[in-house]
Amino acid sequence: MSTYVVGDIQGCYTELQNLLKLVNFNFSQDILWCTGDLVNRGPNSLEVLRFFKELKERAIVVLGNHDLHLLAVAHGNIEYHKPQDTLTPILEAEDSEELLEWLRHRPFLHHDVDFEFTLIHAGLPPQWDLWQARQCAAEVETVLRGKQYREYLANLYGNEPNKWSNELTGWDRLRFITNCFTRLRCCDAFGKLALKEKGPPSFDKNDKNQPWFWWPHRANRNQQIIFGHWAALGYYTDKEIYAIDTGCLWGGALTALRLEDKQIFSISCAGSCVPSIQW
Image 1 (cartoon, rainbow, N blue to C red):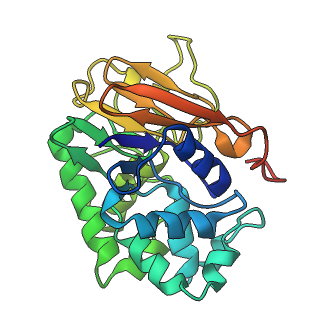
Image 2: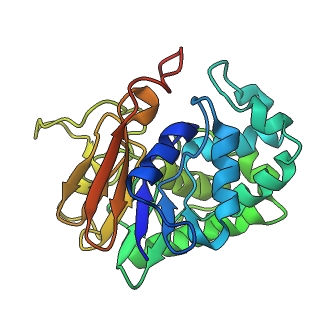
């Protein structure tokens, strides 16, 4: 039995199947993790969503920003439905309600005690150790899975607050936590989020905003963390960090990490998933 972690798929179903063929994925024995962003902008989001749901206990998926965006649009926040989104087939599918319910119950963080790996979509602020991160993930998971989930989704969007405090409460607290898990790439030395940063990381030491995992004082620095979300970063590993979003959607590659031996597998996407509108 092997455990593979695949980066952001975003509706690139054919590429996902080709990658699984490359690694000889055994559907009766192997486990498939995903860094989130199963859907949106690619051509086959519905097929990807169905595929992971049908894997049942053989799949572990953490929520990404595009997955939350789908849930928000599906549950009444139609003003956020963008022209470049490719969510309509899911919204109109006969099994739409079942798929959305499954997605709503995915975690924001998964920690495996045997492999000692933690799976997230985007990032962790420097103030959080693993215990704090798991507690914060549980907070938003409880609300998203509970009776207030529509209200949570309505209060999802926005960049504020941009700095962690234990004193944060209500939707501000949940929005900050959500932004860390699903949108964070860079922050300053004090943990102030720079959510508008989307390009490659700056190697200028004078730049106050650096990748969240570069800050040497971060409380989670001794954890093995796998994440996606940052196509402009590409595959990156440094000590305990594994970034595996290699931009399949944008004509890059789809990448998987095998946890047992940390071997990397990739297939070129050759631009087949590139949407007409870049973002």
